[in-house]
Length: 446
Image (cartoon, rainbow, N blue to C red; front, top):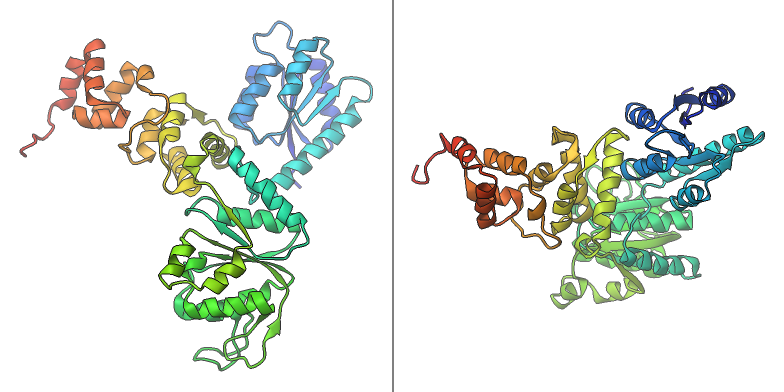
């Protein structure tokens, strides 16, 4: 059995060795007597819990520096403070950073530390199993979730309708509802189910009801009995499917294809779509009676561009997930380019961009060059603070090389106006380098 890996960081070697001896029966212990070694171990080892002392006498960095580093680079790593620090200010600063637990060194600290580690591991496991929960730093999302919670805690069993653009996290919200209700969830995406088999997939079929129906089959709705059924891309349902769904919601029963008698089912119905259902009703593409049954509780998930707080939050979370805690830095210029992007594909597009960055970056960093590359060198202008003030000489040289001497293209890569690029080339005295990069570039006529 693989033991959880715990990092102990303390400037007192004797305490390190003693604590390691006392905990080695349950945990795989790594030790560091300074912050620099602790950072190196965090990158080299797959650490499950970090135990940090605050006071590192005579060292340039203390436990607060290490906690800040962990929060920045590995935000999901649980941190336990084990300290006898008498500096009240440092203790207060540590508690503000939100450690998993704070333990004072004394004769009973071993038992307290074991309990704290076990609690941290159980929380980490719970967080990993609940990854589908709707995590967000956006006030808009948090307000929406408060309303969702009120609906969940009520006695109502009415359907829930989730609206939002593709990639905003509609299925995540449905899973959030299922977890809160402690229900199993069965999902169906109407955009991915072939129209010719959709009725059988949802409602099931009886043996011999059509060619290939060699036995009875329970549909997804029946499989969701006593649970939650999530129907994604509701707007893609055919008129026939819509009529049968209305019966499911109204009568709480399902009729299989080829069946003569309906089956009673008990489930919580949640549907989602990125389409404008009211407009579809006007165009006679969607049933108004079904819509009225569904919109008792309607929640719209804001697009990612409407919640800029989540761009940085998800970027850091995805990097931490995709690198398994290994070193991958986030440069302010690269992050700013992400923040300036409109993200038409929302969170799904952001995750794909982060994954490409982790794979493609030679410097193991989300810097300006990597951000522009993974966003397919977008041409949109910055919406937030401009990045031109922090563009370095090396950035310009790299952009011109990538553009093969084409200054207009280089300006696009740097996300600045070409006039600004010309001025910076002059200011940095880079004309001779630019000319070398232009050699061999095909002429406009060619």
